[in-house]
Length: 441
Ligand code: PMP
Image 1 (cartoon, protein in one colour):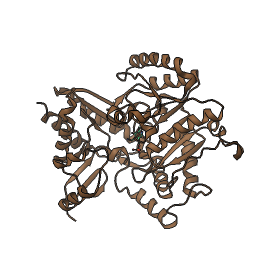
Image 2: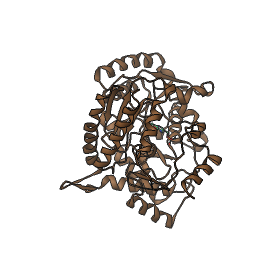
Image 3: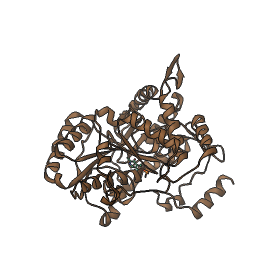
Image 4: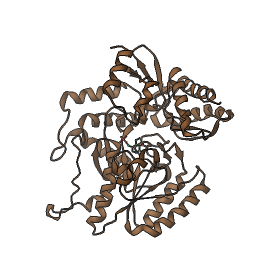
C-alpha cells in the first residue's frame, strides 16, 4: 500500500487517541513505514526526526539492534504466561534489578502507565484499609497528569482531559505548585500545601506527584526542593507518597530517576514508557516491604491485593526492559571525541548542547519562556488564545520540514531519544525556531 491508500483506509476504520478526528479533514495522517534511530520514514521516503520520542517512550532509538535481538531471543522460548501462580526468568531478573537500582523491595507489574497509577492509588487506599482506616481522599498537584483511566484521570488536573468527566471521578484534592523552578516559589507552594495537609490528613491515603517536570501539564518544571518538602510533609502527616516517574524516569531528568535528584524515596514509584525503550507496553509499581507486609496474611483475612491485568509481566516486554537496563549499565555505550560515554553521561552533554541551542529562541518576540530539566527542554510561546491553535501551526511547519514536534498548547518541547546526534539536534531546534517565527503574526 502507498501513502495515499493507507491514509484513506486508516481514516475509514481507525479512531486515533487524543485526536479530534475531524482535524484530519485538513491534517494528513502520516503512515510510517519504518524507523531507525531518531528517524521515522513514510512510504514516500519522507523522513522526520522523532523529537518527542513517540510520546516519550523511545529512549534508545527506533529499531535498536540490541533490544531487537533480545526480544527476538525471548520470542524463541516464551511469548506469554499467566503471572498468577507462575513466573518466568525474565521477570525474576527484572524484579531484582529494578529493586537494586531504585532501593525498593517489591515490584508489582502492569501493562501501561495509567494502569500503574491505578495500582498505586488502589494499593495506597487498601494499605490504610488493611490497617483499619478508611481514607477516601487522594491528594495531587495542580496541573498534574497521571493518565486517562478514571482513577488516573481523577488524580490528574489538566482540564482539557478531565473536565468532561468531572461528575464520575473519585475524590481528589489538589495542592498549589511553584510557578517556576526557583527555591522561593517552592517554599511558597510548600507553605500552602501544609495548610491542606493539616486540614485533611486524616482522610488522605496518598499524595501523587510527577517529580520535577509535569510533562503533559505543559512541561511545567519545579525545583527538587519542592519534591523534598512534599516528602517531609508526607512524613509529618503520615501520608503515603507516590512518585509517578512514567515520563521522567530512565534518565530523562539527568539521573536514572527524578527522585534521586531530590534526594528522596517515595513509598511507591510508577514506571512505564522508557522501561521497555518504547517497544512494548509494560509498567511497574515499586514499593516497600512495609507496604507489602500490610497485605501479607492468611487468605481468610481477605487483605490480598486482588488486582490483575491479563498481560501482567509479559515476557516480551520484560525482555525489552532487561535489554534497556543492560544498555544503561554499559560504561562504554558510545564513543565520541576520543572518549567513551554511558547513556547518562552522554545525556548530560546532550542537555547542555540543546540548552545552548535554544538560547536564541529568547530573541523571538512570541516566545515567553525557555526551561530545561535534563533531557526535557521546553519553549513556551506567548499566551495565544487556545482557539487559535498556534501550536498546531508549529506542528504542521515541523512536519513539512522533517521534524515531528507535538506542541502542548503554546509550548513547543524537545524530548528526543538519547541516541540523537548533534547535527540532528541542530535540525530539530532550527526547524522549531523557524516554525515559531513563522507564526509570529
Ligand atoms: N503518568 C504520566 C506522568 C504520563 O506522562 C503518562 C502518559 N503520558 C501516564 C501517566 C499514562 O501512561 P499511559 O499513556 O501509558 O497510560
